[in-house]
Amino acid sequence: MSHSHAPKFAYQPALPIPNGKTCLWLFLSTEIMFFAGLIGTYIVLRFGAIAWPAPHDVHLSEPIGAFNTFVLICSSVTVVLALEAAKRNRAGEAKGWILLTFVLGTVFLLVKGFEYNAKFSHGIYPWRPHGPVYDKADIHYAAAVRKRLMGLKTGYQQQIAGVEAERNSEQSESAQAGDQIKELTGRITVVDDLLARVADAELAVRNEPDSPDGRIKLMELAYEIYPPHDHHAVERAAAAGAVPEGPAMRLVAFQAAASQSPSHNEAEHEKGLNDTYSWLKLPIMIPGGPMWASTYFLLTGFHAMHVLVGLIAFVLLLIPRLDRTRAGIVENVGLYWHFVDLVWIFLFPLLYLF
Amino acid sequence: MSEHGSVNLPGTYGPEHVVREQPGVDPHHDGDDHGHGGVGKYLVVFAALCILTGCSFLTYTDYWPFKGDKQITWAFMMAVSCTKAMLVIMFFMHLLWEANWKWVLTIPASFMSIFLMLMLVPDIGWRQNNGFARYSDDRLLYAADPPHREESNHRPAEDHQAH
Picture 1 (cartoon, rainbow over the protein chains, first blue to last red):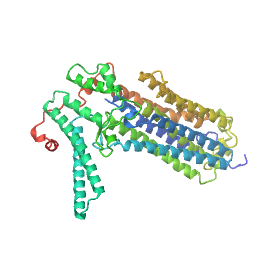
Picture 2 (picture 1 turned 180 degrees about the horizontal axis):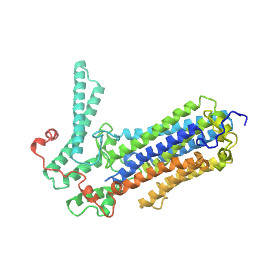
Picture 3 (picture 1 turned 90 degrees about the horizontal axis):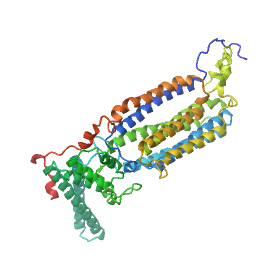
Picture 4 (picture 1 turned 120 degrees about the horizontal axis):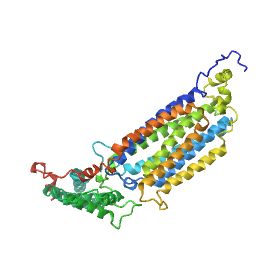
């Protein structure tokens, strides 16, 4: 009571917390609604979708997701320990915990980047009107496959012509040029085989539009390019009698039969044409894949951005001396970081395990 | 409020006010931790969070007994997630020890997030899985456009090259 000049109000003029903390909590309550909107969108779209890819269809790894959850939980503990140290005026210890939190957050982002890369390398990303991922093996999918194959073929023919022109101008038989031409010719053979199959399926679809044969051929081709890893959705649909009797039942029966193939191994990525020939990079069919990509990258992208902002805050915290007078700042940054952890606590089961 | 008794008493406001106006200083966390917090408590919460994450992950392994029953798995995972969230909010974010202002900020936002889903799921979310409004059958059947007999002018030129 040494401040005799202090006004003696008879009422509480504000919240019993610092203004900064009030603002941060107001911000967090808007953040709750922000992520509620995102997660709500995901849940509604996912359960309203006709098909949704299994985690392995889109190269999601549950152990990696669980590891990242563990990393974020650890970072939540370290940031709370930093606050405890700052409150006890142990500035050095607090800075150490903040540094460790920063390292853990960086690990999270690196793992996230590794995961993103696994999707990008298979062409799984949102794109308008279409990335290389198609919902169904219809005529539009066939057209996209054919376009890619024709592009490859033209490219290889030009390459062969170029190599031959070079060889003729040098007037010498180099073994390297021969090998190159052999390789390119081999690739053109593969492309030609696939082009014939696409044309066969397209003709079947066009000439017998009422028969499911053409669609079955297209689906066989799509499964060969990118084998499905989860067939439970199809099985359930067939078992529940969701599809009435009729020609369409043959299509469903084909899908169910494909799901029971003995080579199927859910835990591993089955090898498709795109894996056997890495240069092929054909469009792939993942039922529900485009919508999955949109929601997945939206949710994890916004979360990763929040992690990034948190990391910037930790870097700024590393500059000043984190003694008792700065415990409030450490607490505010910590509250934000716990919220980021909180969001991931819900994202992990929703995205990886559902 | 009772944790910070001095704040509530009228007349003791003055010095608190002076301290509060200094940026970054939390008058309530000055000195020791008023009996809450503490490294031991945080480590217990950390262990609980790790065990609960393991529980979520259990649904992925072969030890999970309800493999075929998606609804049970989903309910279990959401229960685990909510428990984890409550642990983080109450202990790490100190809401357990905060005054009544915490309800004003958290409850409306939580209501909004819960009702956003509850209101949309019956229509959009269950359109594939609703016992009494199965328009999903039609959607599944006609998911791919039924192919039409194409006229010759739509015939792709590449077909000739492929043959």
